Amino acid sequence: AQKVTQAQTEISVVEKEDVTLDCVYETRDTTYYLFWYKQPPSGELVFLIRRNSFDEQNEISGRYSWNFQKSTSSFNFTITASQVVDSAVYFCALGNNNAGNMLTFGGGTRLMVKP
Amino acid sequence: DTAVSQTPKYLVTQMGNDKSIKCEQNLGHDTMYWYKQDSKKFLKIMFSYNNKELIINETVPNRFSPKSPDKAHLNLHINSLELGDSAVYFCASSQGRSNTQYFGPGTRLTVL
Image 1 (cartoon, rainbow over the protein chains, first blue to last red):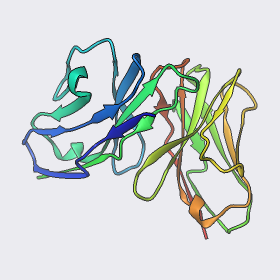
Image 2: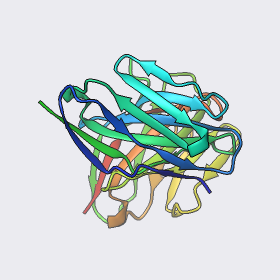
Image 3: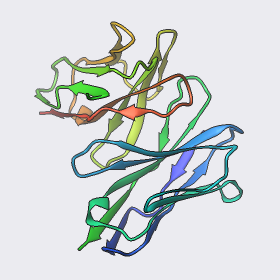
């Protein structure tokens, strides 16, 4: 069975602070995929990044960066110099090659960035 | 152009009614999904479907059924609605297995 844990249910920061959202996953599959999605107050789910299990290279995209560590089964997400527009619920998700390609989502972390 | 669209955006109905939510994608993807997001924001897969197979999450009641008239559409039919069905339902699509899923805007269903 797959499981994704986002231990931080809610984080509050002041604008321009850096913030890291934690994600820990469990799977028995050797090939799997990790994702982050953003759900702003408007409610839609916005794809941010995908990582394959065989690619542990970290990634940076503007103010966003992701740290994938198989040794600790973690896929953490850092926002540098946070902005009010970053306020949202962020979901980490786990997928695999099995039938259905069904994603298992973590419980989400609500990030509030105050001006 | 919207990649994955859902109608309606809001749906309010009485217990016991039957309702449908429509989903369309113009990404040319071959696999579509339905997810349920409950009041605590928890997202759970309901169905995965392509033209070859339907995969059903075992926890989904058989009152829920997906229907796909063609590759670009996957509608969700719900019979005998119950209070506990109130949630936001998201449609998603991807190209093949293991690829990134793109989500629709969601349909907020309220059962009174």
